Length: 419
Ligand SMILES: Cc1ncc(COP(=O)(O)O)c(C=O)c1O
Image (cartoon, rainbow, N blue to C red):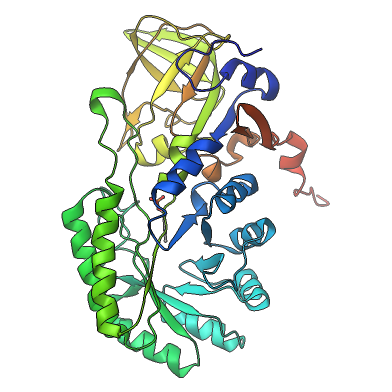
């Protein structure tokens, strides 16, 4: 029988009972809704780096999305889920800053199209005799974003082919015998439509430089979600307006090249962030001077975004039965790691802040919201802590999609040599 579960859209107590804490939960219906929202684009290419669990990829596939892959591992994930790299809209495209041997091997064997970020990638494919369709990721000479950790364009960004070198790279690709067929720009203007129109204009300039053969353009990802709630929430991105700008650009490009050009979008966080929760247990409650600390059984080994970017995640606190708790006090929420930066309530630059949360006791549940993107995917084994379980909520049913890692699995690759 379903128990009341307060303001959460799932039964956190049952989840904690069945799978322990910390535990990731993804809601299938949310992922499907987000994919449907951006399906005005000809292809929705899920940036799987945001959440690459095989089951999440399978949900995305059923909902009509295709994927990108930034490593050999992500190519294998895509193939395992059944994405066909040779389909008319390729099920998987390799889009990374470099090619290593493992990636080259897979791309060659499976004919995975490549989105190149440097001329060297073309040479390395050609050296191996690989001739797959090529799109070019362009750095238009400017970026967007509040820090170098998220800025994807401009002179200080490592990503993409510098815009002035695009004609030479395309010419070299043709000379080597590649089907040079597309352009890609991932700048992440978010909801800044004035900035986005500059990106669209840069895409049109790139299309003019590209010359014949252009069949596809990709708008990249970067569609934002509001991590803050209530009065502080940022309005949802106007997807129709976002699409409208890109579609107008696509049409101008079509009249330039004289044939249809398909328009892709490549979101990560937009498709999965809001589907995901990190459910944790409060293991210690401490008072130090004016400050109250809740110490959790999850740390930046699970969710690194607050420590890495000063990212904000909405937090709710619940009794062990999942009920909402009353009251409010300023709290510092931190994890179990031997690192002072292991704090969930911090701003960029590492400044520790407080969050107004209900008074709680050990054993209560604390839930970090909007954790579906760059959450489990960025987890690590630092401090020899096992990766948490991942669970998919599918029509009210919890389905384990990754069991908790065992300690033995952490040590398995290690050997003590003769000493
Ligand atoms: C090439 C590329 N495409 C898409 C994305 C997805 O970005 P977001 O999750 O902000 O939509 C990224 C993120 O790093 C990226 O590097």
